[in-house]
Length: 183
Length: 183
DNA sequence: TCTTGATTATTCATTGCTGACTGGTCACGC
DNA sequence: GCGTGACCAGTCAGCAATGAATAATCAAGA
Image: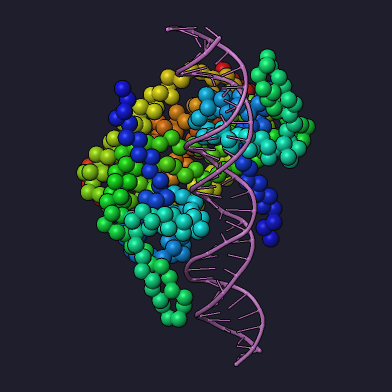
C-alpha cells in the first residue's frame, strides 16, 4: 500500500564534500580546513572523518584522485569529482532541498525536566542561557558577508537565533509571573 | 587569564536517562520504549545505545540495579538513581539550562549549494520542502497535551517549525522574483 | 496441542568516529 | 647549520553506535 516511499535519507556530509570538490579539486586536509573555517554552522566534521568519507566515495566511484607533489613536500591525494560523482551530487542536492528532516534542538532535553527545579531558579538559569544565545547572535551579526549561497546559511542561523531569543523571553516571563508551566 | 571556563559539555542522553529514572525505576527496554513514544522530538536514542549508557552510568556509580522477576519471564535489571546519580542529574540539568549550544539545522548543507541550481528549479524544490514542513507542523499541532515540562518541548518545536516556514516562504519569494540570491 | 506471529529483553559483530599520534617541512633566531 | 616551535598531511588504536541476531514468553487460531 505504501511503497512509494523512496525515502532517500542522504548523508549531508557526503553532499558537503561533493559540493566543495565540485567547486575546486582539493586534498583532504584542505577540505577540512575550509569546512572548519567556513561551515561550522552546518557541520562538525572531524579531520579523520573527512578522510574516511573520501575513501568511501572513491571506492564507490564518485571521486578520483591524482598524486600531486609540491616542492619536495610529501605527495598528496588531490580529489576530483567523477562524472558519476557529479550525478550523485545533483541527486543528493535535489533530495536535500526538497525534503524536510526534523531538527533536534540542542538543550531541549534540559527543558523537558524544567519542572524538577523551582520556577525562580529555572528562570535564573534560562536567563544565563539567554545571555549566551544573545552573544552568539551578536557574533553572527558581525560575520562578514560570504560569497554565494553560504551567505544563506548564515542568514538562516541568524533568523533561528533571533526567534529562539524571543521564545526564551516568553518562557522566562511565564516562569517569573506564574510558576511551573504545567497547565 | 581565562580559566573560569568550566566548560561542562554535558551528554544530553545521559541527562535524559537520569531524568526518567528519577521519576520511576525502569529497565532498559522500558526506557527505550518511553523515549520512542514520547521524546522523538528531543532525541533519537537507539535501543542498544540505551543499554550501553546504562552500563556506563552504573560503572560510574550513578545508577544501581536489582534483578526483578515477573511471572516466569527471564529476570530483568531494574535501574534506579543512586544519591550520586541524583547529584549528577541536578548538576547536568543546571548546566544544560544555563548553557547555549549551537544547533545545526538539518538541510542547511543543501542550502549552501543552492546556487548550483537555476533559481526556478531551486524554488520548486523548496516548495516541496515547505510542504513537508507544513505537514510536520500540522502533525505537531494535533499532538495531545503532555503532562509537565514535556509539553514545553512540543511547544518549542511548534514555534521553531512555524518560524522556519516563514523563513522558507521569504526565501522562495526571493528566488522567484529576483534570481540567484547572491548579493 | 502445536504452529505462527507478535512482543519482550538483551547481546553481539560490524562498522564508524575521533583524540592522539606520527613524520615530515618551513621559518627564524642564534 | 642547528635547535625550536609552528604548520602541514595523514594514519591509527580504541571506543561508541547500531542493524541484526538471539532467546524466551505470550496469544490465538486450526
